[in-house]
Length: 282
Figure 1: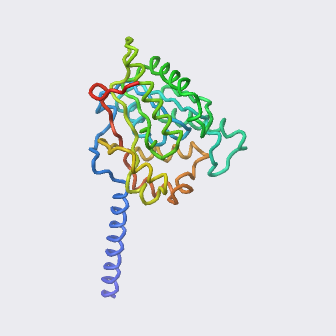
Figure 2 (figure 1 turned 180 degrees about the vertical axis):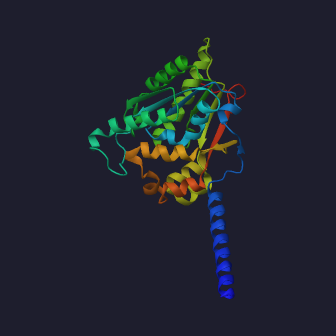
Figure 3 (figure 1 turned 120 degrees about the vertical axis):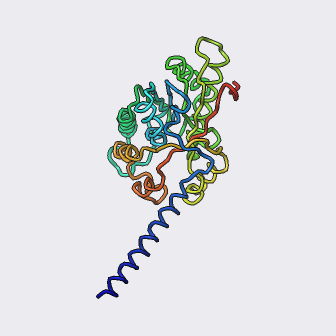
């Protein structure tokens, strides 16, 4: 009997070590060694007013931690723009008529940003998948108008060459955001634009393994992040429940269930551009 117990203990210890080793190996896939851990990126930058500029409903899922902590920890005023209603998206699972999807996803985005404590959120009606076809001047002018009204000192968005996921809408929204900030600075009014532009960065190793051709595009074109902070994993899970039409997005896109992804990917990564020392040009 004693030998049996010893054998069971040894087997249990081996299994425990294997699970622990697998967990840490998995976490390595979602680790960015260049990033320094901080409690809050907005707090680190001493931001008091934050604007996020995104393309689709559920894009805010990439920045849950940043926006939640900006409001909850730092007391910042937070705002978002989502340029499309996501009407061309693939439902995973199907929850509505496809013809009503834009309405459904707009509601999902507004509900999720409310859940994150966001003070204001505008969802525009540009075509999902067609942002690059919209006249650039129209988009830049609308973002400039929002910048001048909200007067953020921190803007959060996409790196134009990669867009966090390789989506063409994301990349164009990143470009439009930069052009709008440059215009505000060049106009020389009382508000000269944000002090910092913060780009959401995707984990490189995980994208190389699971991201396919779009993942490779992102890896090849995004900068290394300087900051890592808590992803507020509970808010991530809440967000996918709120985005009911996209609740199985991670599983369908990358073959990994959300519970496993966020057990390993529990940080958000950001590259920050200091616009005082590295200004944008129109």
